Length: 518
Image 1 (cartoon, rainbow, N blue to C red):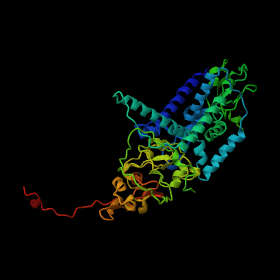
Image 2 (image 1 turned 90 degrees about the horizontal axis):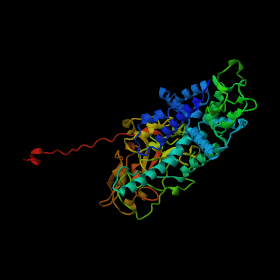
Image 3 (image 1 turned 135 degrees about the horizontal axis):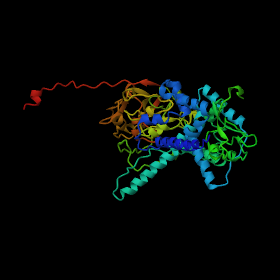
């Protein structure tokens, strides 16, 4: 039975999944609906597992579908659904185009490395830490590659195009601001991408069959797959063409055997076999063999931050330039996790740092952490109020999170979620230090938890009522003092409920006949 068409189907499907993931992370205009984004990430294995463990809803069973497909046909997730796998295939394809004589050859399994890596990852999960998952998960790494490398580059190209067209009075493209770019956050995805592409250029799917925890887990399940690719030894001519195109390096020419636990179902072998000796065969059940805490000081300077945007800031701040530097350092006991994450512990235990919420955030207040949650939770998003602030009505991050590290919340619910409390430091405020009127923090507070009260003479100074504060960071972002803010948000380890400020009523009685005699 000729099955060469499976390779063509696999190529189309894998490119489609990669394109959809790319669109999600490169949506610089934030026009994609959250329902579409959730549908695109539905089948990504680790995010689906985490989401299912938190919500137990039908929309989180993508990993079950993947497991069923693996039990039926092997590692089709690795060949068609995993975006990192497709990036590796593109690298291998480039190698073949550059070197026409490039061939793969069978290599023995690095079983000690594969299973040791998987065991360490599983042990870390049992202890409630996703550090290794964040570093090794193929989907999350792809997300960081697109979000931290390609997304800023696309935005820059967009802005350059808009600037150029504007010179000719053409306004088809509008510029988009890049709020911040942290070099250290882009460095790991760049190094990871370089290593993985180099390995795939030289050795095909070596990463998938050595370090990738998803690949190893699905490989173990593949030992019990019902339909397996096998070589018909009677009809096989022993030409070895199949082994030379096998990106998993799992076809042994001399024994005419396929190590199906490493086979990534690329179907290259089906396409080249001259005798059609490789086919899916039903598993013979009789032959199954038994298987073998956070630092408060950043250790890396944020001086790598630079701004590329060509537009003005989305939050119009009062143009006040302090003459003196503030002296009192901010004493944050905790960083701020996104609304809907409920607790920082829940967020850290379920976030794989895929950065989908970062790309979906319209104000870009979500930025990759370095030591904000501790080094073992590196790259997980935190609310960076130096960069921006959280829109009072926005729930984009909760709608797109594929793991339910951020639970879905409605706009009405979000307005009562207190993710942190504002702390006012009078000694840093320019009203105190420079006898200058300001009020930027109060002006931008959506709940009026920050109000200006009488101070000295005609001056007014901020006063914070934390029971009304939701921790959105608008006050901190608007505060002009440097290097330390006069008002900042200290994160809540457990999110609380803010009270709604009562509407003030005017007690003054108006005599309409007297005031309006006409």
